[in-house]
Amino acid sequence: MTSTDPHETAAADLPAAELAAGALRGTLSETMGMRCVRLGPDGGEMTMPVEGNLQPAGLLHGGATIALAETIGSMAALLQARAVHGEGAQAVGTSISATHHRSGRSGLVTAHCRAQHLGRQVASYLVEVVDEQERLLSTIQVSTMLLPPRG
Image 1 (cartoon, rainbow, N blue to C red):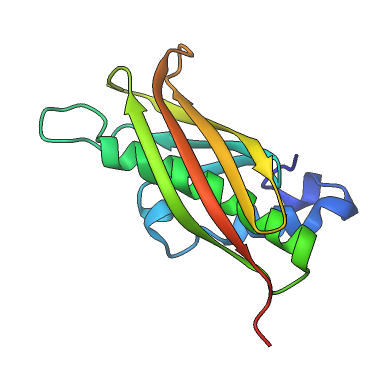
Image 2: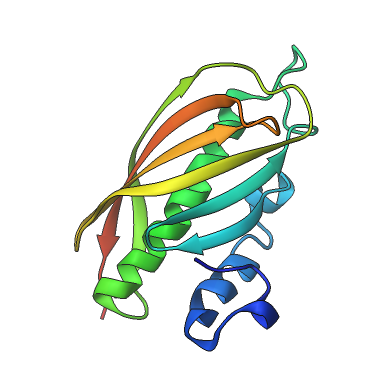
């Protein structure tokens, strides 16, 4: 796993650190305040503030939670795609399924992502989103297709 600060990362982990540090710039994920804590082909961890990502009832928006899970799953899948197909490979989402167990109300939420299957064509991840008290808010399954570089 990798820190988002390339200055604190071993040389072998620099591609993941660079991806984590730069990939969110100018994206919906940056607008929503997402921050990658660690990342690797086998999963990672990402945080997001509840404030600014609310539904009208004042609770964490379910779509924001899904966006958080899809972001960390897709970033991990991109690293898996590059591990099996080389530089220039891509990962695209094919399916996402979410179950919301309770509402986020304040503070930060954290997405804990772990690989369920790491193949050459498909990678799937289970993402558990928790609040600051480690209470389970949502369980999200993210499936991706791994694409070799286009020639």
